Length: 183
Length: 167
Image (cartoon, rainbow over all chains, first blue to last red; front, side, top):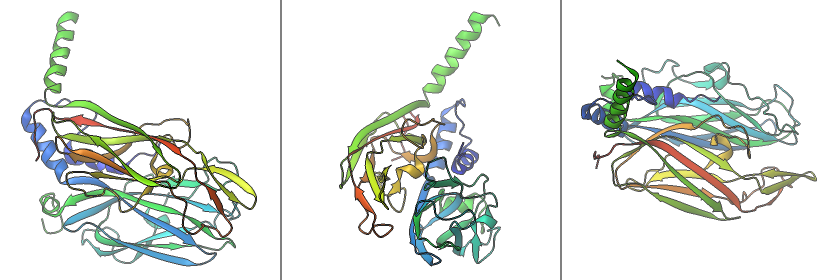
């Protein structure tokens, strides 16, 4: 269902697949050395927005490691499901110090633009107060610091929730070895 | 190759493969006491490094939130994983289990693990920090919370690489 992007990415890094046969110790060393320098990481942003308000939050990712954004998931609660379809929060992700290899360039990006099929849908709970979705396609960006900007569009009620940015952090030296911006 | 030879070859492959890498699960069930934060520590094996490739979480929803006279069962537990060896958190905050649990709901349909890669040295310990406290400020004015003990069960799945060392 919610196919992970870290899985796909890490598999590409390591050649590690469920059930694959390792033939010798050298392959094991390759996997271990690679995995030492590529770890999954979550960055969570909690928000509490008044009607029509905008909130900002920022996080600094780990020093000397490059964060590769692989997926976004989010949920929010409104006041008893009072927000109408289309009035649900929009989430923008703004990368500072983004990598030159970023395909998105500078500036704030609306998630619905970066990942056009990320839609905050209602997920089956009666009352419609629980919303959870995850981007369905891989998109990558590199950053040492990023900011999310959360916007409440329309609606007359406050809402709160969380956005989870899931990705992989790669040791700076390994990043360059993989053909990073200076590699 | 007859069937017996084929099976023998297959078994030999498995044996040789498991000399380098074998599947392993580390599971822990605990109670996140109402209104408290705490930690659980899972000692890992000395046999070799453990490459976690994913985890699966199930949880109860005993706590309640009342809003506008309507009471809803919720689970507000957040978790944060660290490796004891480097004490480096794998998330910047407590991540709500409802956001990362694979069943998605109590006794809900399971669709497999949440892929998650982290390499732990042999003899390391996997630490689960959890928080089951009500928000200091209600998300919506007037909300009231009744926090209850929640049962959390997490299964970390991955591979052990016997005889190897990454320390």
